[in-house]
Image (cartoon, rainbow, N blue to C red):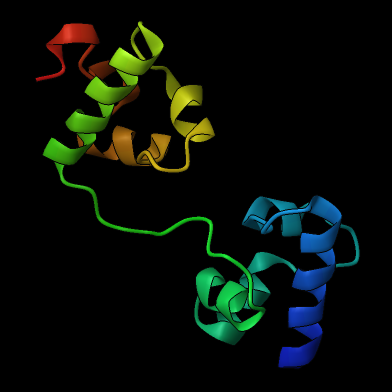
Length: 118
């Protein structure tokens, strides 16, 4: 069983190594570090763990409405000059995740393309 101080220390060490706030996948890929589920169980959420360590929260979880997802599809289309793909949503932390987009439309194949995102 880990103590708050130990878990916070692991987060700070990793943040210093990365020169940024660690993501869940960063901690999970780090050998001899507790996995993100330990932080979620201990602090109630990954974001709570980051806050306890004095680190910047890098991702807010929210429920996206279909209209908001479509707005982001339009924005990404205009920004990229092409229909956005799955990776485009993974790389931009402000946009809904690819899984959120899939959930809203059923599959990525049903996502509106280009100017049809209305």
